[in-house]
Length: 198
Image 1: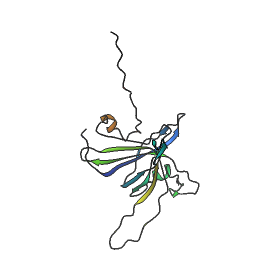
Image 2: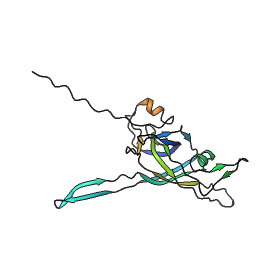
Image 3: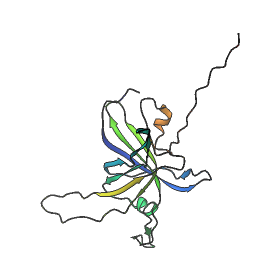
Image 4: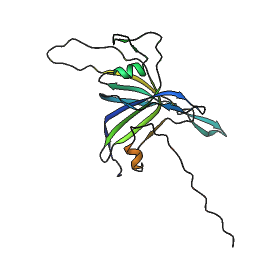
């Protein structure tokens, strides 16, 4: 793929619930589910560089990557997201009920930005959200759509993974199947050429 020069837009927000963690601290994910109505995503990097001083100078710089924090604005929280992630329950009459002991689940978050050449696809591996505010207003001469905003925190997995995104070097099969399962990266090490004796 060609390199993008710019990015814009927000689309194809998905979530994949973390069902459990294995013995190595890696999550087991459910299948990704679309969260329609994406309006905006604004997340800031969390964590700061901390200098270590020795020999009258900055001897070493500690990089503290604490993930990301921010907001995901959507048109409306879906019923399946409310029950699977926010811990709300449907009663026998199909009424969505929120209780004060509801446990919020963790999940992977997918989304993509448009680019001038191709779409940039992202996945954040361990996210949690706070309950959205309840807000609306009376209708006057024109209708104004009221959105819902989820306060989002993305933290690292036990092995340090925070997020991944596609780029011009991404394998086509991986890119095409981005929203079918949570992509877990693999790294290969370059082999050292065998020494020859003369």
